[in-house]
Image 1: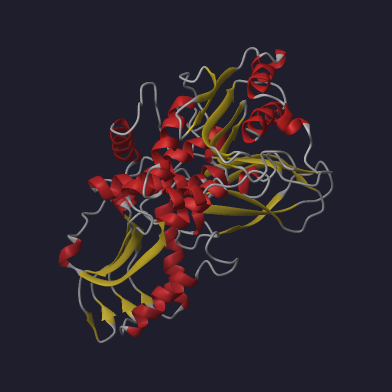
Image 2: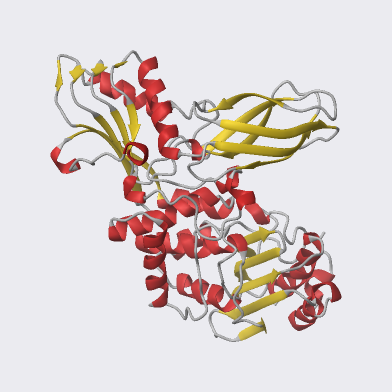
Length: 470
């Protein structure tokens, strides 16, 4: 049953309750709600104040991808030969050219255990072409996307964890590394027994101990392209195999090792080495002048954007952003993508005070105001891509990362929005279809709080419920 207070409170009263809350007096707050049809401002508080908003940043990223890539755009990966295949033997090199596809072997598009299907299919296709031996090298080339690793402003505490996995020119399995631990009695050190995928160069220093707990209370630390990893924290006691997810140190090298193992398992003889462009610093070929053996198209932008917004997948958000830069300029680096993004939005909305450094919102260097979000959301409301963009957003009380927001309250089913959460940050931005049939855009962010996140959310819910009841 819907609670009566959920829509009985006026928006102004709900706003007053949030902004005068004693535990939030030292926090930064930015709020704005606008009626799309009339342009009337329904609610505002520091609407022009810009600060980090966490994952609501993905609203800008996915909108940019819909607008500049298009919903049906697919990232491509190519496998090339720089010499002919004669009597089953490739005397030259086998090249894999990455196009930034973040869906290769992704858990979001492949059931557990089927992540190798795409590489098995590649191997089968090569065998069907008559290839049985590679005398040259297998070279993995993701150089179009650079090797800078994570964007500016990502915390060292995030980089080693699965949600801190960064996309590269070539990716596989969401660039996730799974660590499997055996745990004993409480207080004893957990033992690393395996990783998936296997990592030949990993140096791992673990301080994880067993404890009388039910969930994962561990953290993995490490930097991009550094195979030294450490971990600390606690895991449940008496587990024969407990899995902890982290990020892959080097996506290019990881793919090289996985692909080599697949080819060998299929009976293809490899007499050369497996190399990566980053480590070997090779001269890349003119791909138009060598033979394309096969091309793999990944999932389309609409599918990727839907997972990005529905489940807040950081890896996908960064991949979409870099992909925009790659398509527009031929350069898939973060810097190139950000230049494209800033130029594009600067020509569409008021970007005064807007600073975006990544696609996912993990960067605490981002500076976005409630006004920026509402400008973006109004722009997309009139875009030919609006229906798909809107459908990519989760619904309050129903789905995705906001399925618990306004649950059994007035806002349930009426709010489609993106949430953002980091330590000391809570944010929501999106659309409201109100009780009377009016359409609003809104954004509400609280940054710098030290109280429980649930307390902040409860205050925000009152604002969202009051707007939904108009």
